[in-house]
Image 1 (cartoon, protein in one colour):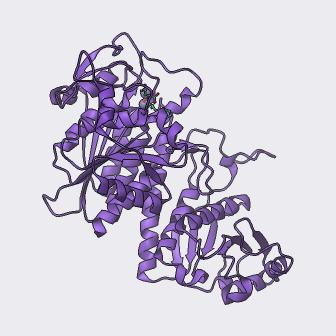
Image 2: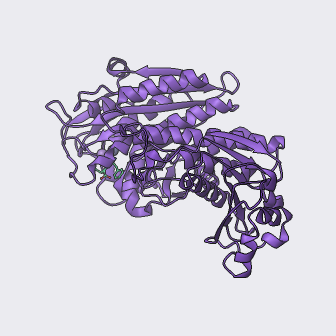
Image 3: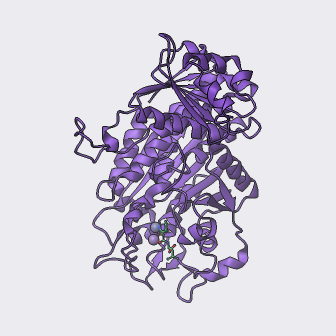
Length: 506
Ligand code: BES
Ligand code: MN
Ligand code: ZN
């Protein structure tokens, strides 16, 4: 999507659709711009206001059509509640709804007006608006063949015109332009993550993810490195290899490097689980809902999307993205329950359940990353069903060895509208991983499943400050957000980006 920034008076803009968020305290009669916009549509909104139908409440909407010859063809006022409670997330939502409205009216461009929100309309809201517009415009139709002219009466998504461009009406100050540039890149990275997530397992294989990563690296000027089975063997990555053994698809370990910091400056490392299809292995999953296990690479997708945005923006930090990628299937060579495998760290692992494979591929990836002496490692993974039980679909879990880092991630999640919530990582939980036959088991029983999974990971990060995001409940699903569609959410791509940006600013 193309985004422009303007400081024009909204009532003079020639656009098929002007969308205007309105707070309950700065309503039409109080704000000159709003009453002038209302005049363009013949005063429909002020009449709705006198009837009590439009007071800027979160569910209030008024649509009007241009009466004269000048100004927007349509004006859509969206109530967003009180100015006090106006958050970036609400603006993201309003911007997403604006795109949905444009689609509904079958127009390919729109304007979104923010300037009238007054002093509150800082650059944070401009960033959020840019994000909502770009995220709202994402769709996945690359596998639908029946494109072309719309058959009579069909209302398929593919036939609705794409919203190609949007103008943000408010300020054109350098701060605003910068905020929109950042929001555009963040949401673009997240959209890339969503596209990779949406691709089915027979398209998005480990080698496909690696090829995409290399393409991204070329596009935005990142360094890239891809390890295959031979290199993994040489590196002693027996845990990662033990998962891949059950599949015909070769595993890959993808590394992308952004060098925006001083040479030699310790890197921030982002690690994402890139399990392109999780059937469970010999510990086979039940059939119901198994198709969703194509999303088991969501962490990896978020990291690739974040790395593209970091490269695009040229953030002043050294950031390395790492994505261990494999399938988890079953064949005659597959790892069996009870098998003992040797990780890169040298620790031996008794594989009790082959469905606890994410921690195995992450173990070797984290240990590889820990060797770079990083300033911090953050991993994200659709790691445990237990996390969905604990926190549902509205928050990721965050666990880590470093309280300050956990707090940073909480702040970044709140800023991004991708919130997370801490779970403890006390030493007591580690005992659930004690094995009679190896250094540790890969499962710790049903109790505290998200915590014992994180305990397992913590064994492989050395002394680096590290935190883990369990995104099993938040990476995809029927998310009811105006700027998302059902399916892949890209979460926590923007959380990671907000975190890196806060680190750069600090
Ligand atoms: N990828 C799954 C976790 C998952 C479950 C993600 C549901 C999204 C939705 C992971 O590899 C897995 O299978 N975990 C097991 C671990 C168990 C065997 C200890 C789980 O959560 O059941
Ligand atoms: Mn699994
Ligand atoms: Zn998995």
